[in-house]
Image (cartoon, rainbow, N blue to C red; front, side, top):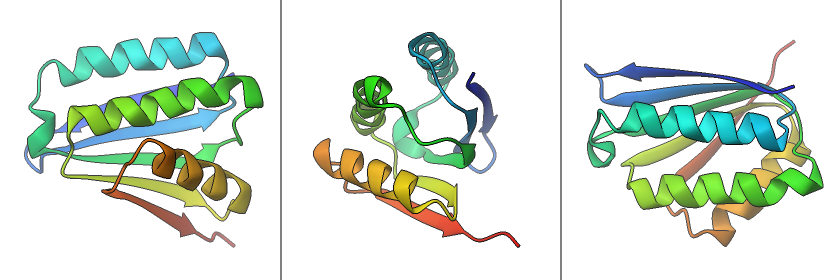
Length: 116
């Protein structure tokens, strides 16, 4: 089961999202609904979007279109910059990089952290 936490840092104009686990279609739809409720209160074009994916599992093939739709939604929302932080997971990094390119997210940065 996937979980998510959304936190708006209005002072620094950052929307922080923390993702964890494996998302089902239902988890994905719940996170999108919560995301849309959150951004209704902010001007996304003034914000950076930071997504912590360190505890996120590789996306199952049937969920990939939903993930791609999320990245397209982030592009449409017009953030100044989008940063995805991963824990040394090359498969997830390739998956997210490919989907980001597919939707034309030019302001996407993917950071891999290594924990010991």
